[in-house]
Length: 108
Image (cartoon, rainbow, N blue to C red; front, side):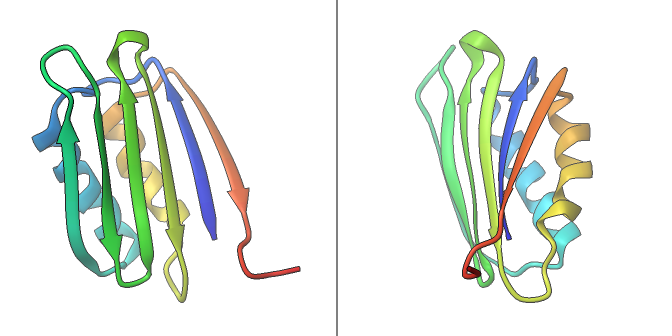
């Protein structure tokens, strides 16, 4: 299952330490296995990009604080359910508007 997530009116889009914590909580909620997180800040007033490598696949994020927007994707296989990450991510980022697009990978 691969979720593409768009948040508008989101918060904490420049806080790399808080984003890492939010990712760890979301990954734990799914029962996934974190292998490595790599996040990069583009500097003061700019966004963050990064990826969490999971045994079950990955989560990624790109933020645009200048327009209060972020794009994430959560791709998981096996028994992990990426939808279980959404509650903690919604609480952390507090988006005003959410769009979630689901793609089932590996099926015809």
